[in-house]
Length: 226
Image 1 (cartoon, rainbow, N blue to C red):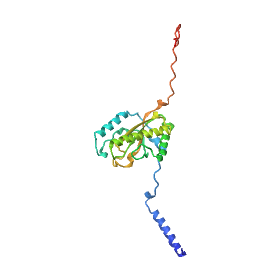
Image 2 (cartoon, one colour):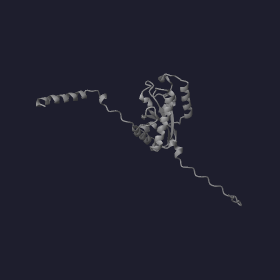
Image 3 (cartoon, rainbow, N blue to C red):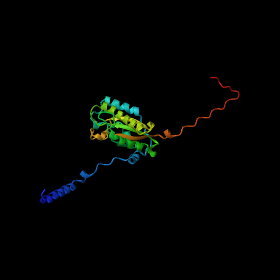
Image 4 (cartoon, rainbow, N blue to C red):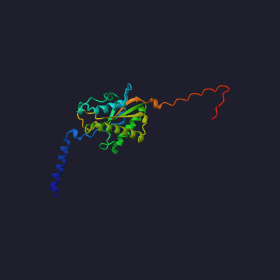
């Protein structure tokens, strides 16, 4: 390259830098950081009263609602269990294989962070509900079953891989019956899982009761033969 071209190259580099500096701040902003365990702990804290949740009844109602084809338009359906959103809770994105209850490897880090949250000393006195959701699309009955299977798989991973006590975890699949973003029924945000504080688990950590003292034998009693 001839020496006379050097100033032209330098000027071009400066122009590119100036153009990049003129981009909107949102275009240059980094992606939001993943929530920390400390942030999730704050969201799970503060259970005032234990809710009267009948999970078996909720599952039955969801199945009946789908069978009866209640409100075919997704964003007009009433929430299946609005009381869940009044509990201390948080949402997390767990990626699964398509139409399957198989957690993708890159989501195990998130599950580990959830396990750290649930096993924090301040959280050991509580039980938690894992709620599976899906976006709207396909068959509602399939989505309901899939969401329950995925909630169950998350529970299994937390118990078997991260050693969270199974006594502290229950599951519920709501499919597309409780959309997280009603304005966008098909959006990926509707596939998030929900972790909610639902009960006290203090009794699970209480020391076992001492055995009752044996009654004194009566005078003159004989031992029975075996």
